Image 1 (cartoon, rainbow, N blue to C red):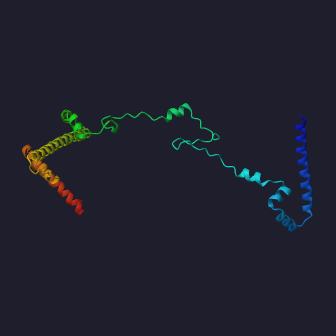
Image 2: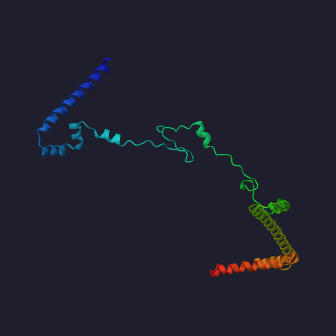
Image 3: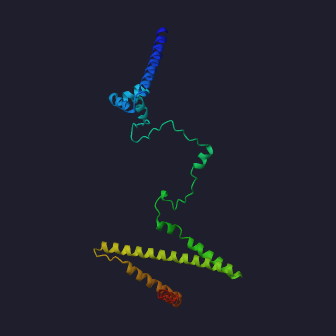
Length: 246
């Protein structure tokens, strides 16, 4: 105990002595001119001058200024970087957690890419029965059309009937085209088996065959003249638009 007390007492005496020395040095400097003070500073050096007169230690100041925030290293580059605990972790309430959760999305497995690839042929074959359903709807809507007297309702019914009829026509055309492609593929395979050079039908040839088939169907149904008149009016309107008369 005595030794500790004596050491603390000696430290306080040294600090008092150094303060007295600095006071005496400052008093001597006050009597000197500015030019003499600058010469003294050059002779002693800036570091010694500051320690003697001002009691400033450059080592302590430089160390305090050179302190940088600690950087945390990762043991593995794939691990997340450790953050300083000085930054406060944000508080997230239970309501915020519930609201941040993504809502469950109801997806149709027929059109979801995660449930497999979409096959047009399988889809068309599986839903081929819809053509019969549309025919029943067309019959029901035509009955409503005959019974109604409201002009707006009649127009809406006519539009819906035309839409369903066009959908059935498109489905029929698609199936006819697929059957034609199957026949062409079969003909190519048979030619290869017989050792003959197969003939691959071009798009132009296929389009010509489709037009011939369409022409024959219209001729059988008696709608050829009506179809030609419709095409003529469409071409005339197109020509007028191109010439700027529309």
